[in-house]
Image 1: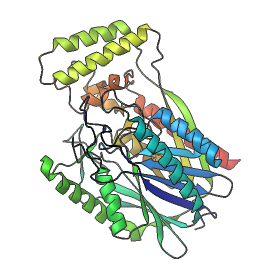
Image 2 (image 1 turned 90 degrees about the vertical axis):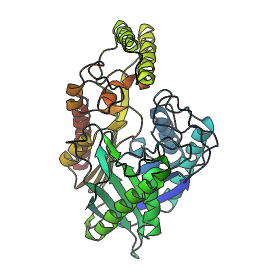
Image 3 (image 1 turned 45 degrees about the vertical axis):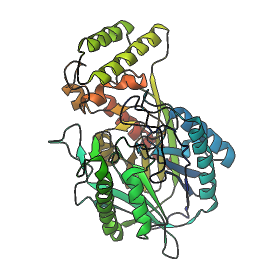
Amino acid sequence: MSSNRIKVGCAEKIIDVPLFAELAGYGPFLGRRNLGVRDPIYCRALSFSDGHRRNLIVVSDVMASNDRECRAMRHCLTESYGLEPAGILFVATHTHSAPLTGPSDIGYGEVCPEFVENWRKTVSAVVGEALANEEEVRAFAGRAPIRKTLGQNRADPEHGHTDPAIRWVKFIRGDGTVKVLLHNHAMHGVVFGRQRLVSADWMGDANRKIKARGLAEIPFFLYGCSGNINVIWTHPKPEERDKNLDWISESYVDDLENDLVRGNEITLGPLEAVLETVGFPTEPVIAAELRGTAAKLLAKLPSEHGILLQYIHDRMIEMAVMAEHGHDLRAVHDLQVLRMGDLAVYAIPGEPFLALGETVMKEAPFVFPLAVSVANGDAGYFPTPEMFERYPDPFCCDDFGAFGFYEVWFGPGLLRPKFKPEIVDFITRKLLSLSEKIKKTEEK
């Protein structure tokens, strides 16, 4: 198959993390100030060029991308390298052991300005290197079955399924060497818990093993739709987390390597991209209702979930004050589709559940579609309609930390209204409609 003379470039650089920069994730106001680097976090850039336009994917080993920072960096890269804004995608790997690149849930990690500046400079440098080493390649793609289950469905442990495969694409030079190995899977990066050392988690360890085995010069992980998928805790004690990490990444890379000889060649041209800023459907924000709900939450104290109750109470009061002052509380985020011939990448902000990604990949009109999340911004969780039905109000569950309930009702952490139950269908339809725009552009 011809790649339509598409050239691919790729580069990677370590992102420096200042000492005492706060690491993000796991709960509010934990103060996880960095004490050192267990393993480095990277920024990687993958570019596709047909000589006229480019698509660019920038992946950073951080917990979440930030809407404002992604838009600002997109502008900077457009100015610096003459790129089309719609063709620039930012993705986080969702490790919970790295600082933030911009504000996220209140208290889940303070933004370190020095780290953000390091990230900006690293992005610009790594993109420049990727563009400079573009060369013609052939592309092969496949789906490696997960032979030993690595994850668990945290919202429905008994019946919920996990991602059954690793979707992969390898880009091969004329001499047969693998320039880049792109791999996509849906599972949280939460092996290390609340430790205070920088780490790219299991995804970084998988990338290291890919390099060590000589499977590619640069491995490139795209985080799937993993809002409800955690790792399996075979070694739950803090001192055993390295064992947990090793078996997950070892099994993952074994399955990936086993399938790399079975892929089919795919085309990489033409290049198309669509980026659209969309208002997501949310419930109305009524200050009096928020204040009433917040008061009822405090009435449940004392409780073993007192910290979470107090946290949501405080955020609801803040949202009520914002509403009373006329603040715009709409949820407005970017949706994006990059198309490289047979390969298409669907980018979703925040943390959609696995089912959303599976539906998009099943219905996409391209040969090899991938769904990625925590892309181009943070929007919280996108629970399925079943979760909304199971948890219809904040007082239907005594466990305020229960997965499923947590994803439906913790929007106030982002000072965001509650999503409407049709949020998953809305995002799915929007993404697929972007596909149609690409198809119409191609027909012209």
